[in-house]
Length: 420
Image (cartoon, rainbow, N blue to C red; front, side, top):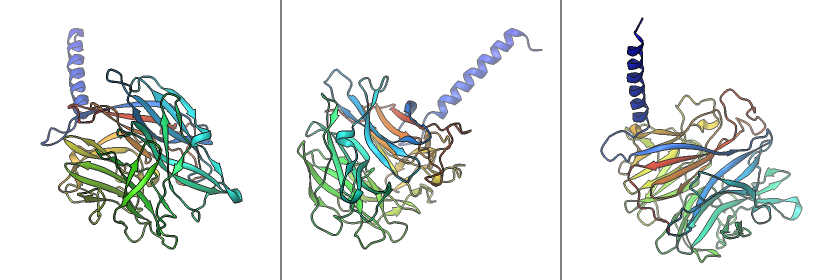
């Protein structure tokens, strides 16, 4: 038998060792050029009742003065689990203390809800993403329209980019409007659903969109340079079309800028792709996302978005090969990895889990620069499995319960982001 004082000493040593290992596991590798940060995972709410669940949680900020934290305004909407992509009105949650306490959710049915159209068609706004627009001093949310006939997405009907502006005093959103496009072949089906935009210093917006001609099978993506005057979003110029033959082409593009270049990540049913540009409008030929050893990343048929720091560019993604065959399209866990911007590859040694796999997909998410010290990735557990009519049980062994998460990336060295 070990004497009691020695047991205490052994436990102390083991505890210190475990603590050191846990701390080390929570850090990025100590390699040249690797940005250091800590991940703190918060659960904001949950809303699963067996028929509906929360999806598309994305946040924007509203500055409130020099000595006050910005308000964080998070939007999300209900999904009907018995259908495919059947969405309802946008809801809002709000925090005035950087996520320590939340108000809501509050439904904005009148301004961000469904609308009736002729012949029984219902149109809704979905895949919405609010982001602060510094030039106008407005929180501008952008998504796209989706049209339903008998509660099914009707792909024969048109699709547009939809947007709305937030009133922080009344805590309401303006009635959504659509972006006017010239009468070209892509105007009938063009939307900015679930895309990550870049706001330029002069206030112009580089807005990725995707669409297709009525006669086409595959989608193409492009970036639009837009202007926003505080009320109306208008088109200035369109960039080149990017597509690939088969597997629906390119959809849900997201844009970032780093080191004087622009980076566009693109969704395809078989692979995720990346392209680069010097002006944010005209991109080179897309290539498949890879690890830095040249092998394929394994991300496919879901969204990927960017996290930027002044010292590094990161990709947030899902992928196969992570003991996750039980998740539709391998959409969990949610990973983050630092990008080698010269190789256009994810540095394998830097991959970390942002949100764990609890048996539900995590593919529809958002990224928000909250302060120089924190960037958030927000996501909800989507409670459908491999078919819209097959839902995850309320009490399931893996634990998914439609939690709405904020993965708080806390930078060891602040980034250049400033609230204006």
